[in-house]
Image 1: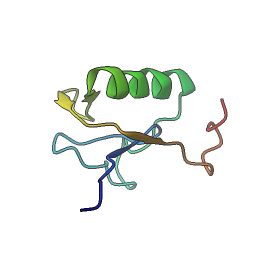
Image 2 (image 1 turned 30 degrees about the vertical axis):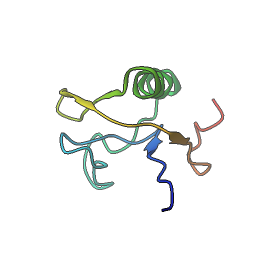
Image 3 (image 1 turned 90 degrees about the vertical axis):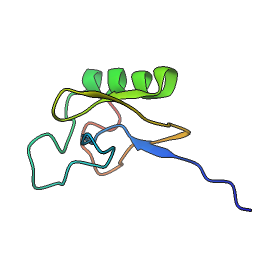
Image 4 (image 1 turned 60 degrees about the horizontal axis):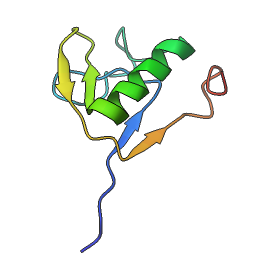
Length: 75
């Protein structure tokens, strides 16, 4: 079989179901570089993410996507 790698997003919000918050909704984008870093570290080291409702859920982070079109991407 083909190995699967689970990707997480540094600059996107997550729902309680573990999906990305739709771009049209509040909380879809993480614009603060420190918040994005803190979230990535939590996802990678603890396998957890805080959702748009404040609930902490499990997540698998084998790879981290940093969107190049986000003005804060290199911050």
